[in-house]
Amino acid sequence: MTHVKIAVFPVAGLGTRFLPATKSVPKEMLPLVDRPLIEYAVEEAREAGIEEFLFITSAGKTALEDHFDASPELERRLSNAGKADQLAAIRRSALPAGSHSFIRQDSPRGLGHAVGLARRIVGNRPFAVLLPDDVIRAPQGCLAQMVDAHARTGGHLVAAMEVATADVSSYGILDVASETGRVAHARGLVEKPSPEDAPSRLAVVGRYILDPVVFDRVATQRLGAGGEIQLTDAITADAGNLPVSGFRFEGQRYDCGSVAGFLKANIAFALDRPGLQPELSDALDMIGSLRMRHAA
Ligand code: UTP
Image (tube, rainbow, N blue to C red; front, side):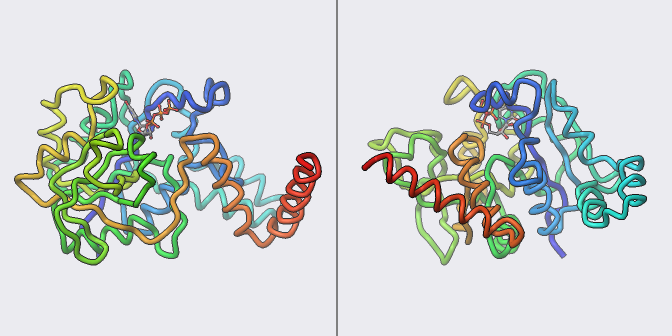
């Protein structure tokens, strides 16, 4: 049994990189193959033993609430039409009544601010944070791997992966003191450092298991990079008092917050589907050879 029972999904961001698609459709509802992005994060949380789901939303995100609701009329129609696979798919995407709740962030004041809003529901328990933009394709879900590791490390544990020097300024970067297996013991995190100032190339990816003490930090946190309340700053502020660690997860991470990353994820996940793989492989080959012919 996992000791982490509740997960927070901050989904209040504006999703400007996907405009105009995200003008009226939440980024988290964009389909990765045929399932909305948010479903991948929720399924990963369920696999890790999470039983309570808290979404930090904002105006224009009601489609998310509808998505996790039961849909008796649609279920009845699919059942009458004998569409068993589709029926199973929509039943699988619904969350049990009473297991999930939604809190509104009034304006996008940063990830730290969004997470801070979870305090009243999370209370004094360790909790997971999953950013649905980061989709991780792995034999065992990234959060499940982290829950196992957190049973040993305690404190704050963040998912981490090595990035190129040129890319460190796009991430929170770990200041690593020492490493044990997949766990990097850190002195703290630096949000979006320049390559010259980066303490390492180990970057934070959107999965966290946090000690509730972080709520005290974000409540008093000054504005950080980008004029926002940064979660990484709050985690760093705790580094002298409790363990702060990075976990080198097993798996491939796709940055579905960027258009290119989202398209790459679509191809990778579609190629995993036996029903799509042959047609898609043929199409990719054909596009590749057409491009070569054009370039020649
Ligand atoms: P991003 O930095 O990707 O911002 O947020 P965004 O608004 O979603 O997208 P762009 O950059 O405008 O295209 C990372 C995660 O933090 C959440 C977002 O919803 C996303 O899951 N977030 C960010 C909040 O919930 N509230 C905030 O104030 C900021």
